[in-house]
Length: 162
Image (cartoon, rainbow, N blue to C red):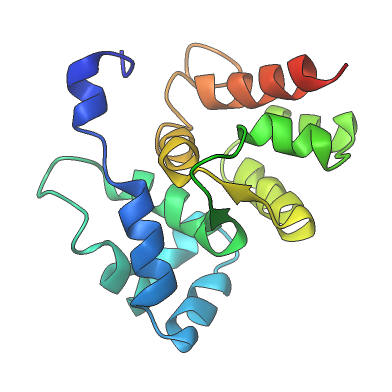
């Protein structure tokens, strides 16, 4: 279970990688990353490896998880004090139908749909929390129709509406 204290302390520094993305990559490298049509397309972009090389402990995490994070990195800024993504989607007036396009889609279409919404609403997220959601997005997909990250976004979306 990823919720225990030991694994929480072992999580990657998503805020650090976002800051590296914003400050250390050139604008050309950031544009190259935006050209990826799906997370898997990042494997053909040198800037992807430049970005992640200092954040991946050898053999610790799969590179697929990093593609999930980096694919959406250009589309959300960082703020420590911001609600979860589901709350932000509700506040931005994202329709339920669009949210369910993400929830019901399989990888990589769910990421492509999520990217489209992020491009539209330009959110500011807490990258430590959002990065964790993206990093573990596919966990549990085989046992459930949706992983815990999708469920959390959906729950936050509905529970924030009054």
